[in-house]
Image 1 (cartoon, one colour):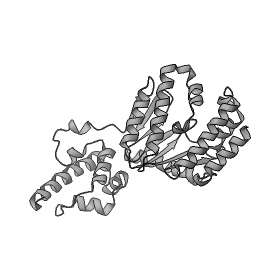
Image 2 (cartoon, one colour):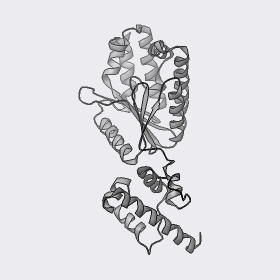
Image 3 (cartoon, helix red, strand yellow):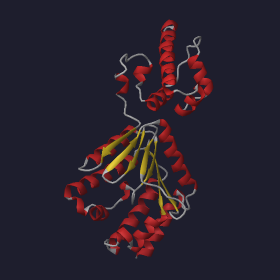
Image 4 (cartoon, helix red, strand yellow):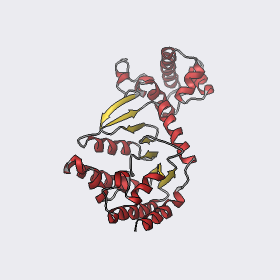
Length: 284
């Protein structure tokens, strides 16, 4: 790129960055903190004498945090309406009628190469046995159960890809209830519960370290079910709905919450398979 072209591009970016700061009505330092920039970097970007431009990742962070497109920031989209094509900071997506499975597949694909952090509602999708899937989704019809089974197969295949990096954090008590056949698992036979625990133990061992299972004490910590799909988005599971989070600030807050669960885990991924094997023996 010629120096004059770079100067022109930097000038457009500087002007639009200034527009965002003015629109936010906050000090540049606070703006930089919120969108994930160093204050010194922001000063360079706003300096009329500088031709410095942000890296692609930082550019995407700014666009996502402010609800604009990278094209608009770089002057490639002139209309303000084009800048609103990006997803809003929060949105609702239906998870019923199979659409949830399609959404999850797309979100996982978008996050390929990034770390995925996952707090399941019950058991992690990719390690559910066919019997557990049929049990959990018996009331939703054969089509829904089949869609969930296909989702499980896809997620398992996804996790076996070398670029995958997935961390799962869940309460110890969920597995204890499965072992004892209590709570929501009261209608599942002993053999089916044993098979599920044995499957989880095998996969926790086979997929490690690509797939890492952490267990925390649900008496000390609580978490709603959610997934952080790298830096792109997070999705909180609400049953028939997903609350989708697209803003950088909110994604980082959920990431910090997940990291807190990991710090407080009483069983780490290096011991998860052995713990599950012990529970399977208890189930027998």
